[in-house]
Length: 286
Image (tube, rainbow, N blue to C red; front, side, top):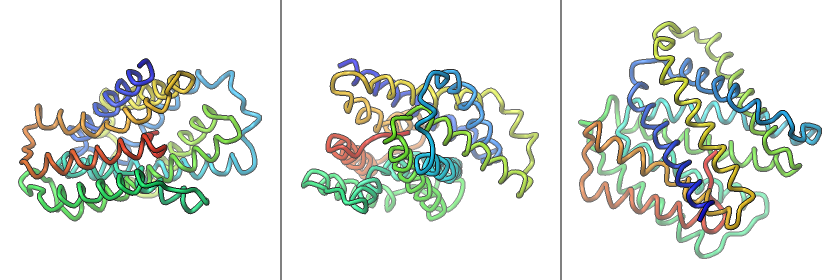
């Protein structure tokens, strides 16, 4: 029960994080916002890694952690661009469907998938199809295809981020891997800013929500990490995987994003499938 509660807490934090992206994402530069959120996460997370086994992070593990950071930048950028367009009920199920890609990555490594895993995958795909076909253009700040494209980038980015992080953590350096990936993501975002030279000042005016997002993200990750040593720790990852439901409900309640019966059904199918994949060992957020 304790692990489940920690997972639900993580879902709430990640849900509020994505809801904040939806509110401010359309008027500020996503690269600058991303760099600010990543750097905040590094500052908050760094003290917790001081006593960790950094010696285990070398060779292949270090390379995988660095690649995870690059993938995390792409994932965050796709998520921010997608939420800036909206609506949440379209973007959240697609971004949150990354366990589906995780299954494919595990199969590529020689893993196996049971009947429950395949059933969950089919349910997720069916739910996404329903939501995508029924999306209301009136709730969008851009085209539906553009929102879907950025959300798909986020989905693949998160799947590769977490897969690479998990593979790097097989050496036992869990928190060092997480911090290394975030530092790499921060540096990648800063390099992109230096190359594309977006306007920085307007985004810096939103420093309060930027800091809040960084704290929410690291807080959610910490809750899931704390559940790792508890009985039935897998329940934390499964519960945290439904963070998209929180975002959808917040957007429906406070932003007036309308959901019809078909859209509710599609969202229900997607997150039900995610729970199935989580219970079969393919869940998790970050």
